[in-house]
Amino acid sequence: MAFDSLSDKLQNVFKKLKSKGTLTEDDVKEAMKEVKRALLEADVNFKVVKNFVKSVSERAVGEEVMKGLNPGQMVIKIVKEEMVSLMGDEVTELKLRPSNEITVIMMCGLQGAGKTTTVAKLAGQYKNKGKKALLVACDVYRPAAVKQLQINGEKVGVPVFAMGTENKPVDIVRAALKHAEKNGINLVFIDTAGRLHVDEDMMAELQEIKNNIDVTYTILTVDSMTGQDAVNVATAFNEQIGVDGVILTKLDGDARGGAALSIKAVTGKPILYAGMGEKLTDLELFYPDRMASRILGMGDVESLIEKAQNALDEDKMKSMEQKMRKATFDFNDFLDQMEQMEKMGSMSDILGMLPGAGKLKDIEIDDNAMAKPRAIIYSMTKEERSNPDILNPSRKNRIARGAGVDIAEVNRFIKQFEQSKKMMKQMSGMLGGGKKKHGFKLPFGF
Image 1 (tube, rainbow, N blue to C red):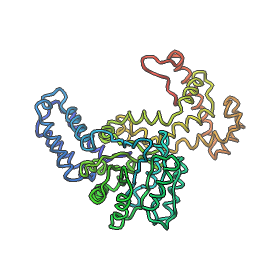
Image 2 (cartoon, one colour; image 1 turned 60 degrees about the horizontal axis):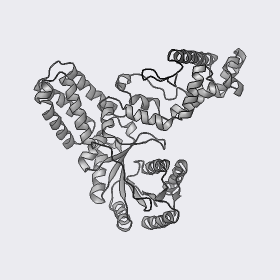
Image 3 (cartoon, helix red, strand yellow; image 1 turned 60 degrees about the vertical axis):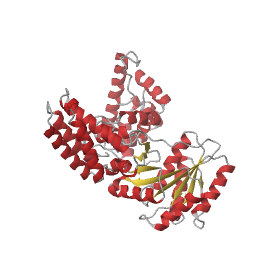
Image 4 (spheres, rainbow, N blue to C red; image 1 turned 90 degrees about the vertical axis):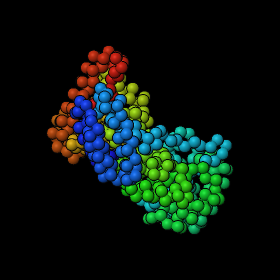
């Protein structure tokens, strides 16, 4: 899970604070020393850490906190508020031009930061909101980059404008804008070339596009796992060409959190989105308050609810709920349910959004745990899937051979399936046929 290392260290500090009935200035000083050490080890910018610790310390030794009923909890609240302030206070959304004008978004960044994948993710999100978008392939140095953009564009349902690798990027953009105007497209994403490091040629090329094209937003993509280097890259790009915002990629794999906590404070530019996985749907708006909650081990229930709302098919869920109440839920429904849940992301990601998830860090989470049940179901006939009652020993043996598992695995899965079905029927009876009671709604999972 993201920020594991930093989150663990901060939670240990807070545990000590909460265990004290009253706090002294020395307690706060000692806690702030540990917080400072944890942030520096997380590769947070030194000046940012210094100012952060100073702000928290000044507020934490105030009379209201020290003499409060729960001073430890109040210090944690202050840490969270200062952390939110560090990352930008509130979510920053791009304001598009009126629909009769073209909004041009230029994406830039170093090679390996995930820029080409990210621009497709972003275009896909706007397409899903009903916008008519176009991706423009301007990485003329790597033919593979053009192909990659075309493949990703097809996956998210956004067309790609490409002119090969023989033309200047600025000329490709000009031609793309004419194409957009003719075809009623009002949102254009430019995928510019990346380099292995910041160099003069790269900056000159980006500046040429900005000098000749009315670019609405310049967005920088940085790899959050590079920590302080990501902040240095953001500073260089902002000073030389000017950026309007940053997208942090690979945040799901960043156990430290240095980039997320430093970029806004150092550059003054907001973090717009966070890349939380490799799928083309794994791009989230960056909410500073939610990110602070995750870092402090408080979970992120709001994002979890949004994930569920975006990923789960409400009609299918209602249909399954009805079947569960009547105990007519079959293996086809089970497969449907697995697919719905997998759209929400990996189990470790989902657990990471739950409050107190840090306590689960020693539990091994196997994100491929559903591979065997899926293989077992796929080895059944259509009749067996829709009518589990006909599964006799000879059928089960055949299914086990087809799935490449032991017969005991098949028996265990079928037993668990039947037990879950009975439990759901009993629960629906206790809850008055699945109607809401006391704000509780029948769950749709096992």
